[in-house]
Image (cartoon, rainbow, N blue to C red; front, side, top):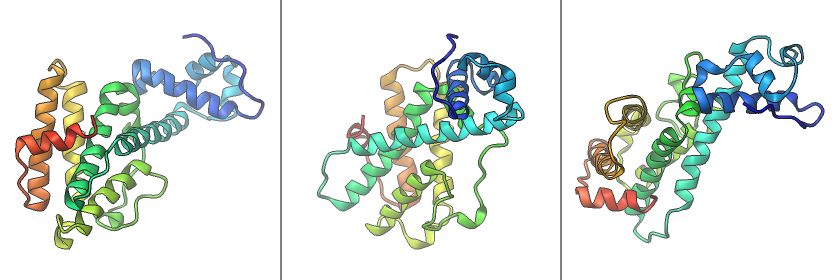
Length: 226
């Protein structure tokens, strides 16, 4: 790894976090150590230890950065959506964008994705489930919450089914992503993954809302953000 030099005075902490992110991109969270990040940033370990006492602290900071990158991927897919006049379909397309952004980030940046969910990272307080208030500083979780709230607003998701709906949706999409990057779907061709993703999304929507989506409609909704 080529050392990264030229950081501004007083910004070594961010330089180390960036280096940790690069380490994670290349070899996953297990590659993140203070010494490795210091070497990548072009500084001595002594200088790095002034900002992070141990690799756990650096790993936590890298996980926070990875979560923000995940949120960016979700936002990018939402921004790609065309104008849709039909409110229910617009809400479904928004949720599809959230799902696709999540899965695409996992496929494109598996090291960062694993880092985002490394053991000891951010936790979700059970008191926040099913409410309109996302977990503080967790933009990705907030985007999912907002997407589900839109389904309530258009009458596709009842208030009775709103609590814990985020855990249901999160479990389905996260599980799919893990099957692709670390499981038996890792060698599937893109068209097969797209078809499986469309079916997963259709079943998820049917389970959450009682609204049946045909495979074609689910594929069309997902295609709007591909």
